[in-house]
Amino acid sequence: MTALVDVTDLVVEVGAQRILTDIDLTVQAGEVVALVGPNGAGKSTLLRAITGEVAPANGRIALKGRTLADYAPAELSRHRAVLSQHTHVSFDFTVDEIVVMGVDRTRARPWVREARERVKAQCDIAHLSDRPVTRLSGGEQQRVHFARALLQLLSVPDDSKPGLFLLDEPTASLDLNHQLRMVEIVREVAKQGIGVLLVIHDLNLAGMLANRVAMMKAGRIVTIGAPHEVIRDDVMHQVFQVSDAVGIVPPAPLPFVLPQSMRLR
Image (cartoon, rainbow, N blue to C red):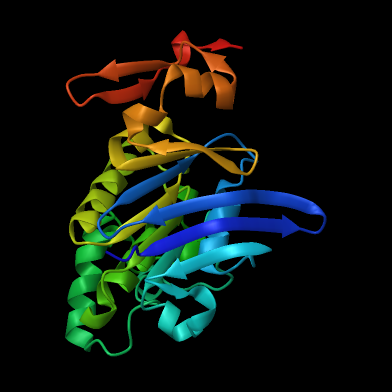
């Protein structure tokens, strides 16, 4: 089966500085892969390379078997949606206007209206419909842009599915309730065959959400595997320089990180 995204021997350089080295990574349809690691590990740069925002110095990035350069921008938007870490809107677009901005133009208006209302309810933003997005809190804005990217993926023609959902720190500004809502939404879209690749700092959410976790450090993937295979004390010691960090919730086993028990290396 062809992977939704296949990264091989990827090297990214900015000026004379190498940011990513020899990255190999795949995301399959219906899979959730989390990129985790310390600040400056290269997680967001890897995501931006996969979106096409950053050009590799070496290696290959393929989306559904084709290199990114083979896609025109409009075509690319029918195969993947992106939620950036920081999204700035300069004009007073309403929430309703923002949410439908990425919708495929071939969709009929009744479909768009119904899908928009459904996605707004999922993301708990229906009560914000007529509000200018620039006047919302950071967490509210994050939910609006998440809804926009989600609706973009859901609206594409069947011959473009399944899509790829690329998320950079989607839960960073959210309260606990909305973090859990987003986890549930991502799980649900993965069940529909959408592949998800996300950058996330919260290892507990990564453990709950991801089928596989890629632990990064200094521009490399140190290890990748199921959450309990990656979120381990020896890996935490190597990557984050902390000890006694990880516990296990049976029977999964589901790893969790408890800051109160940690010790600096």
